[in-house]
Image 1 (cartoon, rainbow, N blue to C red):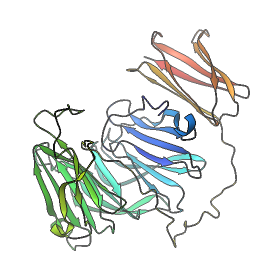
Image 2: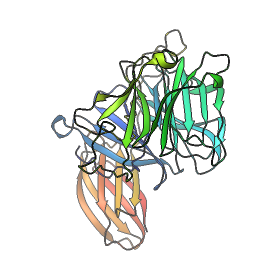
Image 3: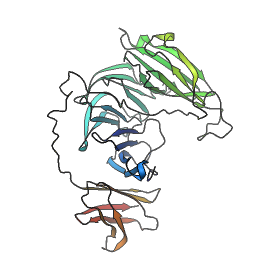
Length: 406
């Protein structure tokens, strides 16, 4: 996509989620927590009306927090059936903090923080919501499995059920992926210790949920298991990597097999044990190859929460509000680029200026504003280390932001 390169991210497995701007048919947010480098929670904006209908990234790498984030960004529809909740977890410190943002037609609100669940600093987690958005499932590589109740109106979690606790080093089950059955009664958890992989099932209606654990798939090399994902047909799909002793990304041309040309399928996830009908490597990908990951799509078609206090948009405050212009600047040391983003601009044309601390203009170029947005990846190669001022000047406004090159 035009301007779609150099988005922040670390090629991890639940590190991106896309949600529409409520009320728009062509604007979408891409949310990304950065796990390994350039810590924080970021967003970019895609406008599908640009580039002749092929779309373009019109805002890129806007940082909202600078916490080291876990690999588990998740989104769910608000109870009004229009807005969105987006969640991430930090893992630079042991914490039980759930960070959430509310996405409305007016933009992004938050972060709001709720402290709940088992404190952890495990960065490799997987999370998912049930099909109706009322339950939230968390697993991590150290063995944690927790289920929460969720209120789509308030965005708050309650009633934590800890099914399994984190284990000491050497005993961890390396839980990797998780998913709910369509009814929400059963959960499925995949594990992967790089040698053996399993899928286990739990019955959330059992009087003893941990004792309901049932292994429905048990694999060993060359396939190693990845993520689980419920599809619109309510089947659950399971991805694997083919590991012939040298695991490479991307695969060399010689590495093709039943294990990476197909997904496995749980055909009847709302049935107990073997009746769920796990069918290994049965869904052909048309010659394409799979790794550990699967798309992190939320339930886009989830409607309003009928009978709830927020099942209607009446009274939410639809009156137009004047939004202030904003300028964000981020410097990426490895790429030697400054990512410059502005939104809610009133002008149409202008000039981008970069000043050094002596007030000398060290860069100048004209700019054009599209629907209130401006974005630019500016190469800073050859610039000396130090502080600069980035100025965006239009016929109606002038925005300034400091930029540190180091």
